Image 1 (tube, rainbow, N blue to C red):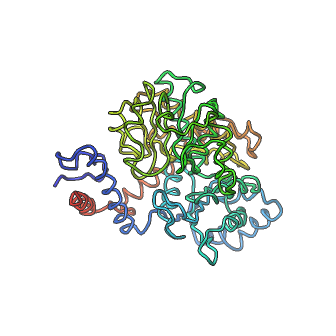
Image 2 (image 1 turned 90 degrees about the vertical axis):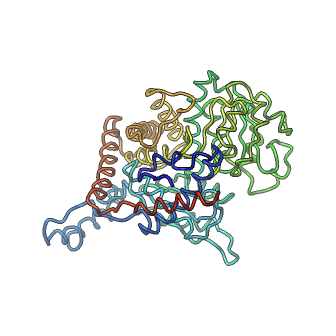
Image 3 (image 1 turned 120 degrees about the horizontal axis):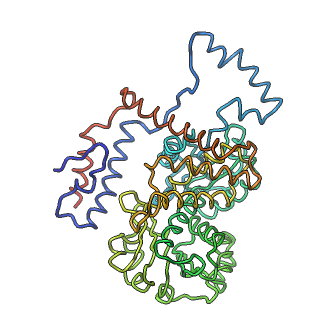
Length: 483
């Protein structure tokens, strides 16, 4: 059996030579799931709480707690806004979920989302220098049905302790009601990463893909396969970025969206899809071959593949077709198959393929920019500015059909994104702390470097132990046996 390095950089070469590209793609998914479970068991999760202030003698306990802290309490009592200066609130995010739509796994019960929510907190800290707390809540009624109003009430109640809220993995239609209500009624930013985060990074990738294909955004025929929270928000962002609605055709599980869809008009939970039905597909095209013929762009966020999108559909698309297939854990069609069918650029949601359209490029920098300005909300303009920030960063260092967006190991992308978002917050009038671009960049850069250096110091000192080699080898051996 091949050895596997702790960095996992040799993952593809670890599998037997006789594995086909499709077998390797499947094997990587199986391996990562197996290793993830055993690694989480080994570490008992992946987040902990550590002090950011020191202890230099016994009396410092009296400074950080009673009696000294009374001065902090009364100051915040008299001026609630001072909590941003006297506590960690200005750098603290609540990651809130009811776990009703966890990645590709559906309803995982309230605690089932903890792995994902801790993962969001992990990425916020390491990539954005932002502290975060995973909060999975039980909002089910006596019949087991998730109640959107309970999430709304919960978030409203926790506002005094946090600088922002990241909503995650909430099923439709509750996710729409929760986000729309909280964005209007909360005094801190409420961000839905499945929707706004995905839309931001998708737009970033599309901006650069269109540059490489030499196609203007206002001319491309675009298919959005799926009309859930992600693609519904992507459609809104694309139209704000200059893509005419009449150039878009969207699908849900029953076919294309258009104004003859009485089922959407009459269903209260489909109000977002009905709104998009009125803005897109004016010719009411329903035949899938007609939809794909002459299309320039396909953005799929639907059912995991690999047979959800057919190669014969891609063959109908225009030259230099751009195909984003972002279902997790398996894309709607594997990249090699899409390329064989004629796609020019293929992007997925996975890091083991080129062009990962990954929310992790967006939310750490966006939330950091919002927190630095102590913003009252994250506007669509702020998210769209983040998309252009990501695209600009990638273009400056060089793009090609296999490399259209930054990767998570390009450290400088996050402070740049945070500073760009901060400036947009000021421009949009939602910032309560006015700073310059340079100040925002330096503050974000310092916090990110601190988070990374602290993590690696803990590793180097043995306070975070290396995963045992036999854990990696067991996961690899187990994976190979599945074939």
